[in-house]
Length: 270
Ligand SMILES: [Zn+2]
Image (cartoon, rainbow, N blue to C red; front, side):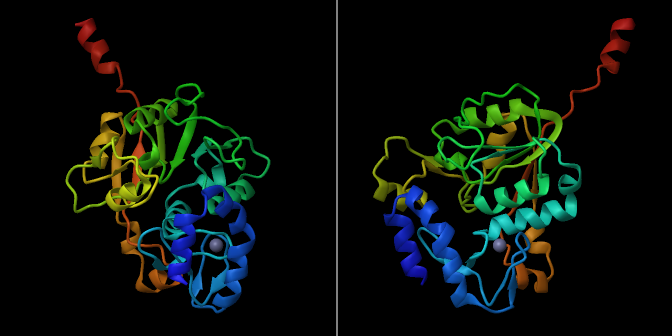
């Protein structure tokens, strides 16, 4: 199964996969009936999650009901336990929205206009724009969600600056990328455009780079404060087995409040 899914991911155009996934994956769920695993996003239970991955298929990855992957389940659990997002509905900008998270955010936000989805081309998104040039005012959103997108973007530093610009001071976000923590410096080379070479070097045919341990520094350069959490690894063994949330770090960014000008005032008054 792992090999079939890997072959499809690498050979069938993404838009076709997106269309197929809505009926083909739930059908797959039939073969995974059971109760050992539970998706915290949609509540469905299975014997196991479905294997998934472009290069190396990962077992227990994809929820056949809502298409969540490990990182989506991690994000969901973290938000449920550590934020008031699901109760207070802050203005949330979700870029390149993953269907599993998007459908459940939409359900949770109901008729509120404060959940905004955006993608360069996906017909499922409310707005269409390039993350390198976001057509939203500065300081206009409370929360950002932008996962596994920056590795596809030509100028990721500009995209980070744009994300920072639209976030309100005091706001936060989750910005995840595939990371190779063994690597000190991000490896990128724009002259490599051959899909096979990109897969070999960057891990997927449409990736432009593979991020190293300097990823946080790039986010900081844009102005963010960066918090790296081992939330998924700190869950109980029972929760790890039930939810299969992966092992990845959760990268949470914050836009600091402007420094209080009281001190400056004092100095001026003196
Ligand atoms: Zn699910």
